[in-house]
Length: 191
Image (tube, rainbow, N blue to C red):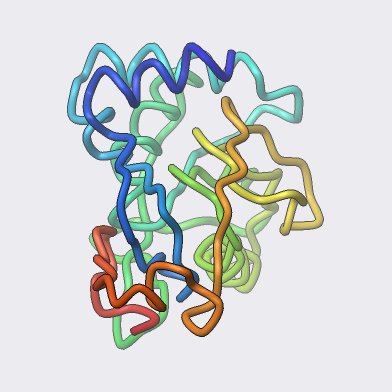
């Protein structure tokens, strides 16, 4: 499955090589620009159907992802499950449900994310959902970039890609004087 998923990234130019500052603040020589894959409805549908088939947990009542990166993913994954799908967005630096989106106490929620590295955004979203009384079943992502599951609950990923990451002081590209690019949906994060 991993090769098939990465084929989608290569074919759409979504596997980037260079010097990148991730939302976590870590640096990497590779970056997965999921939006380049998910902008193709046929690819998004196929990948999310595969992701839904991989989920072995309890059936969700809805799928929610953090904006901006997981907006398309949460919609397509929800479509595969035939449940509502929506997203949380940042307001004053914290995730909130807006636009009439809400979770009800006891509602079974599957959290969607495009790429998980440290899992910080997803952990923030889980805290918001649980504070609203939702029952978070787990996390579904296209690509998991870390060694461990950082969530303490079930997680499924279509691909596992361990790309080396560094702090800014450890980064060999920084030592070479190469500028880091922040290509994700939070360009001001972790600068």
